[in-house]
Image 1 (spheres, rainbow, N blue to C red):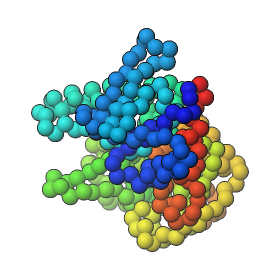
Image 2 (cartoon, rainbow, N blue to C red; image 1 turned 180 degrees about the vertical axis):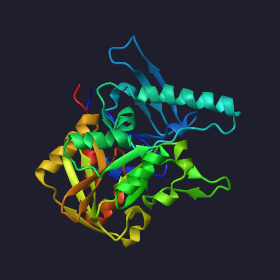
Image 3 (cartoon, rainbow, N blue to C red; image 1 turned 90 degrees about the vertical axis):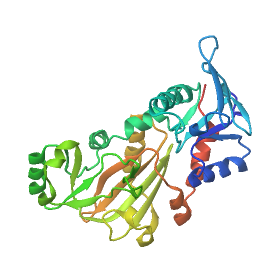
Image 4 (cartoon, rainbow, N blue to C red; image 1 turned 45 degrees about the vertical axis):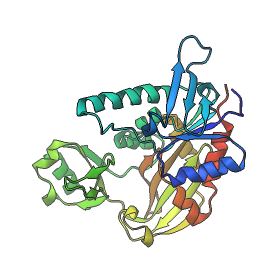
Length: 320
């Protein structure tokens, strides 16, 4: 593989975080091809051949501005892609068409030879499951808050009775709109036994003993580089009010940095955004990993060279 090959940035149109990394790559003279799977059609054409080539897939990706050989791509920055919905088609046809894009274009992009993925989409998916995250965190020496994942009403009520204060988290964030079109989201919130009724049995829920914390940590790991930011606020969930936050770059103990890098290695990830918190007991408590988390505003707030670290990883590519 030639290191003159481009970096493929797969993301939606409006993605400021990707813009920061692309700017770094442009300043280094590293070619970039950017596209979104939802552009499939005249805005995105591709062909891939398998079997008759030394390194499959072989073929090309064509956007309105450039054509790139698949076998020449040195790295893929898989950021925030969107997939087409084919709203002009009847629902059964739209489902069929969307599946062909995910498994045709997606399957091809998942199979590029000798390529550095940041991160590979299938490995992102594996690492996004919170129960699995908690188990791996404990294996690597992190302190997990007592946690229950359940749809058993009696088990939930017993767990809440066992712990002084309990919070609820969504097992996975999803885009959510009411029938009137109003957008909604789910925050980390306290829960008490009187709020638990039989509707809990419909789906699993995640309940967790509240950590008596003094601050949060967002830690962005890129390859072997660790960027730790302390976030101070009086909020249970700091995402609810960014104006109430203050930030400070901090240095973690070496053994914690090594454990975080090992955590990514367990899932085969090149990068990830970790959320931990500092308890009043001065211990670090595990919260979660977002394999493809946001970090752009943290560079703006702290001056940490996070975009440059991503550009280093993507520019380097992978050894043949």
